[in-house]
Amino acid sequence: MSTRIEKDSFGEMDVPVDAIYGVHSLRSRENFHAAGERLPLEINYGMAKLKHACATANMKLDLLDTEKGAAIQRACEQVLAGEADDAFLVDVFQAGSGTSSNMNTNEVIGNLACIQLGGTPGQRELVHPNDHVNKGQSTNNVFPSAIKVASVELAGDLENSARHLIAALRHKQTEFADVIKSGRTHLQDAVPVTMGQAFGAFARALEKDLARIEAARERCRELGVGGNAVGTGINTKVAFRGEIIAALNATTGENYRVAEDGIETTQFLTDLGDLSAAVRLLAVDVHKIANDLRLLSCGPKTGLAELVLPPVEPGSSIMPGKINPSICEATNMACIQVMGNDQAISIACSSGQLELNTHMPLIGTNLIKSIQIMTRACRILADTCIDGIAVNVERCRTYFEESAGLATVLNPILGYDKVSELVKESLKTGKNLRQLALEKNILSEADLETLLKKSTGPTL
Image 1 (cartoon, rainbow, N blue to C red):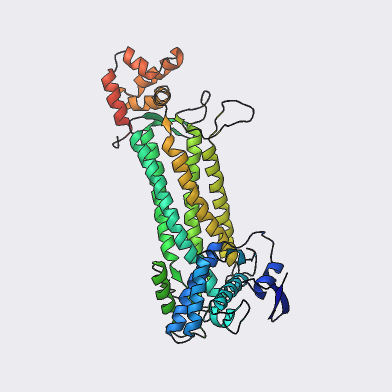
Image 2: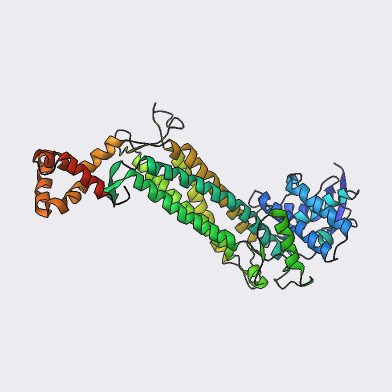
């Protein structure tokens, strides 16, 4: 294999001659491999967007030669088109500020820019990864800003996915509006609700989760890029940060803003922790919904069987005809993974020291994964499960009429003592309270139906 020699402060290394990464990237690949997976490309793309904006700002402030700046911008666009994906080599578990990945990105963009200018990879005199691509930047601000850029964009997809799931639940709320069922508290029979009300409660919980994600996403639009080593903006012009944000907004269509306190945003990654927590709360509620669907559909002969979930695959390698709630189970696992990711993010956010958080790659990787997992999980649950759910109306009605819930409904009309006698007789004869009330002419069929409708509240 043909190589070129590149040199850094640690010495010389042989780099494949056509490689668009460089010595720093190669050294980092050798040093870091504990995770066994590369940093998510979305973070590299976030850095490319920021470096494109930084080139614009540097050229506008006469800090960067226009020819070099334009070549850097074209190289960033190549990265964003996916033309350099294989050149991003660095493991997730690396230097805590993400320096290795920032330099990997600088080298890739720099070498692509060299090619743009008619040179070859490694010709640092044409475009230097530090002096030109990274001009006015520090990993300490570029890397967390890149995580925010990636997260803001991906969270938009998550919001749309959550809305899709909410719409599916609201549709079932309407479809099942008149199906009365026994409510259950402590897993024991309770007063009646409709199946529509149950799905409406699911939807409302997710609407609140969506609002939390939207608010946290907005806070992540505050970027520290241009703040350099500790957030003071050392070695840059005062206007630099504002120009970066203006250029970034122009190319992304987003509404990012300069950090109010650059020192704070360099030390504290709590805004990312906030978004992670909001995604976790969505996972918490989706997990609960999936569990309820599994429970309400259990059976079909020996369980509750109030709901019928759409079959998606054979459920057993030994029991013919068995169907399992596989989509709900997959959703459960997705949600559990997101809850675990958030725990790691919380610990990492709290583990910085003094002027810097040194666990940025872990935070960024877990957050990107969590957003993507929940984006997919919400759509799969909606399209492959919720949309096809059917309700067993007769089973729901039977359970309610045989439960203690009907006694509670009759209590205000008949009085505590008379209902107590009916309950005793029901236990003795095996007849449910509805049968006894009709047989004894305590209530007519019409009166009982009216009473049942009123019992589930004013939303019917």
